[in-house]
Length: 296
Image (cartoon, rainbow, N blue to C red):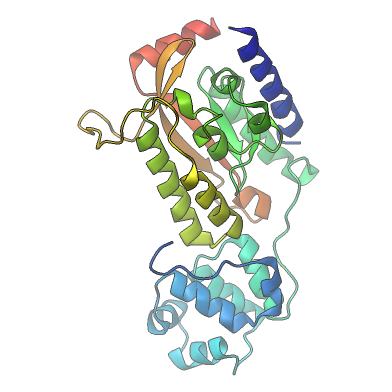
């Protein structure tokens, strides 16, 4: 490895140690912290429209009358705490935003947001660390709701070592690191396909959560120019692929990965509900062999 790569690896290693678990047709205005001052009926209506549900459909699924739902949304009826939670469940509202609904209705928040080093999250933290370590020699990382890296295994650092120091300064954003011209982008062989995949995935998150920070991140990433020397955009053949691979030029040669996402299945803590493990598996035998050899 060159000294520049080693410096980059060391910078990223420090970040890992610091953070290791220590517009669609229905687009609406982003939800923000200030929305606690808005009525719960307004917020519920926006979530219903965002989920593309009619009042009749939501009322049917919630087993309440359409008249009652209409009264709640218009502010003519004040929903109980249980009704707020019942409707939020039917609308699949994220835990963080369920708290917003409760506050808007005049109730105390229900879900806590603990730091990752909180003793109550010790078992979950250990599970994440076990998954990350167990995935070596293949790269894996844990990210928060805004794609900031909170932990990673040792296989990731060598792949990002050539990135600009500014991109490796905490908090490290995985999507920015991947697509920025001074990040991994110049070494991504199929940059156009990978970019399209990441932006589409990010848009799905925005559609589901209406998160203003994710909207801003999407706009930023979409504005990045193609890296110098990037192959022209084209419709790649998918005949021999099962998913969009990440094809990366490295000191070990070209490596190809498929990504998977793991989340906690039944979280009642906001931090856990927003935590995801992104694990990359070899997409071909050459990649698997190269990484196993490097580990040995």
